[in-house]
Image (cartoon, rainbow, N blue to C red; front, top):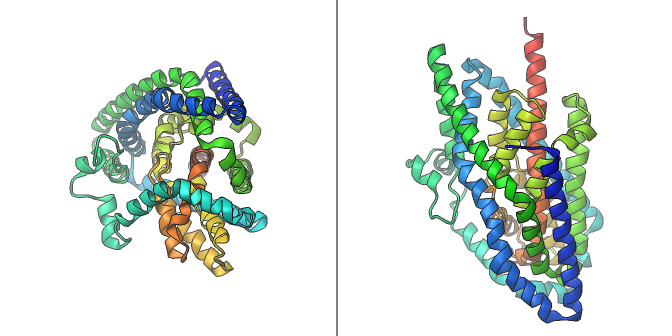
Length: 438
């Protein structure tokens, strides 16, 4: 896959053109509403399906790529005792990353208090317009079993691995967590083979990874055209009225997400990885643009692996282990967003959440973010469950559904950016550990 600057610039220009065209359309729509209605229909009939071609090509390779990259990453360790330090550092940084993100989000919501800026009429209007979508999220949450040790075992180790990975229908992605467990087991088993056989397994896994990466290259050639189509469709469907009603909340979330990605992660890069943040973010710019346009951590995994290898020169074993796990578990942007939404809806409904409540919310946001599917809109059922936990009407999620797609693009960018930074930190620390070893 090519991550050359010309492609990145074409995608970025496409994004800018899509936004400008959407803003112009909304402006014309204020003067001539039938034009806006027509373009909304065109977006649904033409632009959305075209964008889906780009997304589906990426989704095609997610399952094989997660398996081969993770299994290869473990197999390349050579010795099983090296897996402990790698896994320990990775999981510690994952949960530290998500905890800091939620703390930033809650601090922002307590400061700007967007729920107090939303008047009663706007709240009722939003609930009426998006109440149906909110009920779908509540129903999806109700269909999920409660969390228990048995549920965790079923979540990570179902009886039918292929059935779980394949998913319930052709329209839904399968569960990636069981695949991750199986890939780690395969990689761990490979380290127990004789060196010649281990390398044979590793070559086979790497060959499949390279094939999948080539397919991603085909998809990215569509990106300069699919990205403006998707962002145009999102903006013209959301409409200026919803954006204005929720402007304080949207801006507050956006600032909190930016603070975490370019603030917290810059500190990690400088002090934990010895890298220059400005240079680093320039190197991963194509990846961040891809994340913003796809709204899917899973869809960005191929691009993440390519950037880690081609631009950042991370060890294949580290990138192959950390990035597939991160695409499923390291959801700092999602955790931040969940905390923000619960506090915002609580404010809008006049429900007081004390500091102790918010401390619990912080923990639950981190834990629920881990269980969120890395696909567009995957966090909504979890948010409905969190609202019910704190005695807030779950249908209150309808207030934010109108702007969820735009915020989904932002939080996915933070999710993916945090993944690649975490992989960089782990790689740096393991290199230092090996250099210091006698």
